[in-house]
Length: 150
Ligand SMILES: CC(C)(COP(=O)(O)OP(=O)(O)OC[C@H]1O[C@@H](n2cnc3c(N)ncnc32)[C@H](O)[C@@H]1OP(=O)(O)O)[C@@H](O)C(=O)NCCC(=O)NCCS
Image (cartoon, rainbow, N blue to C red; front, side, top):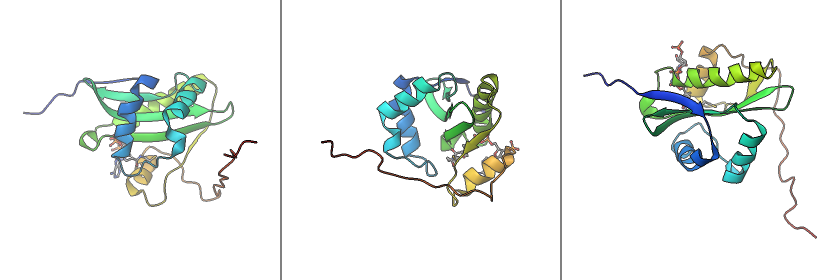
């Protein structure tokens, strides 16, 4: 018999961190770093209230989207859906929630980063109508915080 899913989407709270982090660590394609510590995610959620969402089946966390903006452009991170629940429109629904919230805050454009070899991720964003930029390189600078404080 086909199982009926009891799914709902709600805003992410910092209390969801442990379960979210567990989901992210078991999903290839989600690049994690020190930027994803509990305190950094807490700062991110505080600075970007109402923009990041998760999907639950019952009490089980099965999907996430982190979204923020800097006043000019929106940014999306960590769109992840538990492998057992893929292909049911959950990823699309999470992204739509965040984009609708960006719209209400007057943000007209959103960017995201996908690893070049993440074929599932790249197909997903293409299916959702996002444009892959061929005209931009991403430049990064690390170690801005000098660990030796005098
Ligand atoms: C990418 C991911 C979030 C998709 O979640 P999902 O809930 O299965 O996606 P949806 O069911 O909402 O699919 C939306 C669209 O993407 C396309 N898509 C999803 N997975 C796909 C795949 N494996 N291959 C090709 N297209 C795919 C679907 O065709 C669908 O288009 P349609 O609605 O026109 O049929 C999920 O596979 C995942 O967590 N992947 C690992 C993490 C990752 O790569 N995240 C994105 C990079 S930041």
